[in-house]
Length: 253
Image (tube, rainbow, N blue to C red; front, side, top):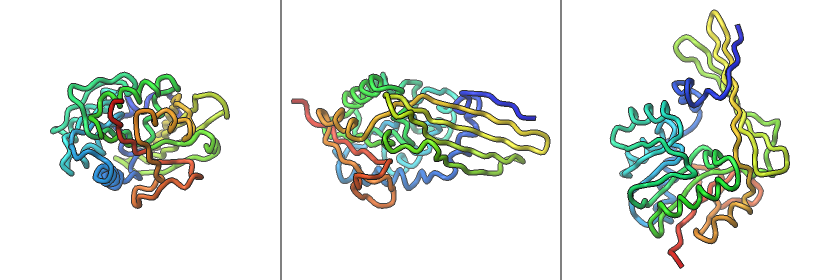
């Protein structure tokens, strides 16, 4: 039996989200951001993770001494995050129009989740909300993909066994070559002895070049680009299609 569904990964399939991400080194990514914070940050420990998912990064940053909170659009993910990080607070909010009760020292957005802004206008709104939420000298760290360097035929794929089933996860970017929207294509195959179930998700994501993004950020932030390598802090080489943006909030003029 082959049963297709759509737009389900972050809701009714949320219990499988961590399986999809088993190849992600959350500890290394969180450690890298804490190093950036030591180099560029204001010394504070109030932290917010945008699109926090099940709270894996927050767990590591709390363990490093941060006072963390998270937000996400999907309640099932937030419930898993709260179980993982009972010390943290979580809220059901959109990254494009979120609010906070007090200003923060560090805001993160891992796993290319900044692209969930969907389009350029929403992205601008997200960046403005980040600026308002940060203390002066606060740090905003996130990773992005350069729209002009996307390979539409390139997919990441891995399999894992869990509770008697074999899961195969696949993801890839698609960009038509014009406009401010690209797609993230995801699929999940679950094979058991009796059946195969297939889920497909396709999410509209904002498409932007590094130059365009830097131009949006620079009026309010000092912007530093690094290679998408969490083990070594290397400046972006000008050619890679993935990069880490490290942005320091400038004082009000």
